[in-house]
Length: 435
Image (cartoon, rainbow, N blue to C red; front, top):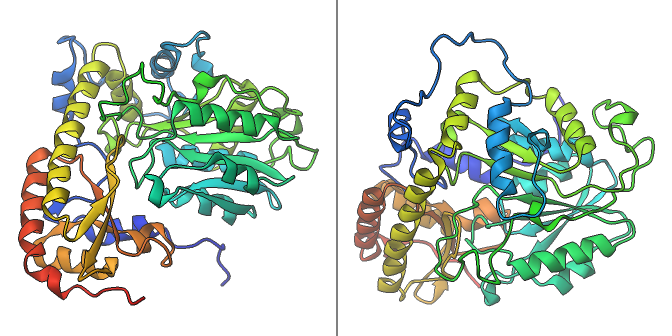
């Protein structure tokens, strides 16, 4: 039986295989997960109820409750001239579903899509599976994983429809700075026809480096705050996605970039599977909602209620304060580990997010990162993720290992201690890449 042409999802397969068996999960990308009880305790309103036990378990609000979308709209409206309407928010089961809805609505066979790289595999494999030709806008390893705007200009084609970015970046922990984002907008908007930008911001606002205060010129704003107006050239055929009515996506002449988000990474609640898409264009939100109808009707009442509680003014500041404190403490611990093992490890220290991309060498040669990770897991119970396998399609990023360092601090401390002992012993048996 013929199956759809889509590659195995390498990082998710790796995590599925190992994470429930790991003693020290240093591959997880969420800030240390919280319980319902902890969330309740974080609220400044002791009388607030996390959920209503009398709520009937029907489908609920298809696009998300008014209160949840209002809480999110308030976050996007902070420090901006133009506020965001709750109707500009579409709730989805996680950011992975939000991204997929965008691709289903916007990408067709024959389109050209550009995606930053390395990044989460979905962001380039999903549009490719829909028939798009995907070009990778590669971060420069020798320049601290920064992107070159001139390289982007060289990738653009007449049929380029979408540029996808991940900011902050997984796996490197780098950012697209404010000036670079502005340059990106100028490049995309000056193309004929202008190009849409999809910004995956699931690790926002984990800006833990002291250089990235909101007043810093390098601080990356949300893509929505740039008020990017673009056209997406469409004809009668391409205006239809999944039998979308033609009047749902008109000839598009004033559409800001869609922006997915999630409560999984920065907000420590992956288990409630709640994400969203934000866009200032009603027609675009309608198109995404139409695509979403084919995969998801609504998120659960409980998920919506918990998300609303977490994003309320009474809770969100203490929740994010907790998580930024974890990130700052833990990145210092990982930095100390790298310094102690600089004879084998090197990195560009992350400035944001929850992940780090570390290169390991043995006897001057890059390690086989899969062998490294499998031996480490088998001999110590410490789980990390191999770079070449999970982010380089088995061809690039040899010797790289991705850490997720925002787990509980004691787990990171114990895991790094076990790994340090292993580096003085079992590491010597790790295979190396031949030149």
